[in-house]
Length: 418
Ligand code: AMP
Image (cartoon, rainbow, N blue to C red; front, side, top):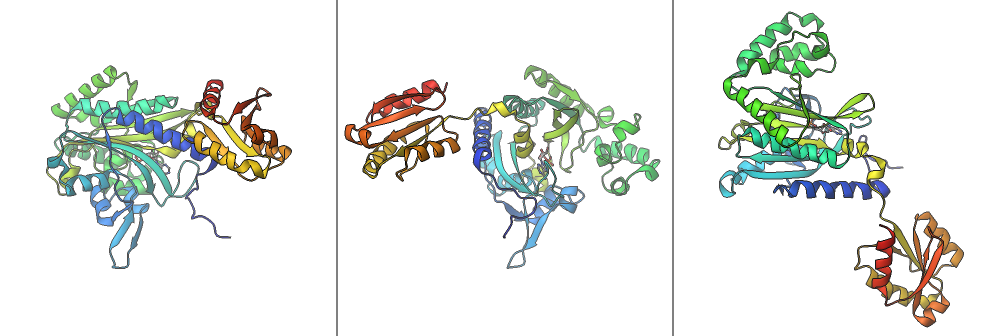
């Protein structure tokens, strides 16, 4: 038997229906704030992610799905959305050709070669937003408030954790401070953090193995070393979040895994009965557009994992739209059923039509397997009178309609499913 690739999932049945509802709701929330969709390719040159995401990050060092194509180009499946979006922004001159600030969002599959486990897959899905051409803390606030609004729309119990990781002015000096601090503890660090000490000491702060937040309360944190500009930005962000009604906590140990962030960094964690689970994260990346060859352009954004979001949505959020299944009991009824199918398909009700004549008992059994609320039946009498029998399986009632009374049938279905 041929099997799917490890860590990559099929989506079908009830889950597919819920997933589509989830995507539709997300698009509605984001686009109502004036964000337009951007679709970039699933693959990019590997060099983009090395430059954009950072050579020292776990994503690039350990988790890339990369390969050489037939012409020997070094290609990678995209592990995140920001690098590709920035590449497209620069390549198409969006900073010049479009009004500023440019607000866009994406939603789609991403790939990381990680060890698959619950909530962690090799093909997973993210939604993300990116705003180009705006350096205000208030825009960071709007961006975080949209992420928060999506989580609360789906009834998730979440906490927003924010931090500032400084800028090119204030971070270098802090890097030295933290490098010194952890150098003294080198022997107590995990092997990855020993390496981080040289390449990116700030990343030690959120190491899941070393856990400095719990172990060393005196760890120097960036928010105590911010320059005036970053400090003002951070307090304005907090003010904006208050106005947007986003409940947040300041967590100076959030540094994010990717190299490109400046000033604002944030994560949204979901409380799942004792444990906490990161569903979304992001921040400001004022240097990335320039680093990828564009004009210096401030930018801010976030990404959220759709599998994690999906798993956390309470079961009763998507109450199923009730279903009707239509049968004929006789070959003479097939054509009338086709007419009926054509007419009812124009209305916002869910009807599955089965054109093969069935015995009544079998028709009802099949409708049951679909979990149908109603069964429509065209039997011999109905063919003669051009009627259709509508059985409500939930109420145990039935009623005959003329086949042309599609509007009345639709109204009844909608009314009784409210
Ligand atoms: P990141 O781009 O690493 O900041 O991830 C943003 C969000 O994407 C995370 O908070 C997760 O919800 C989700 N995510 C990241 N990697 C995976 C994965 N391998 N499988 C499923 N979800 C993921």
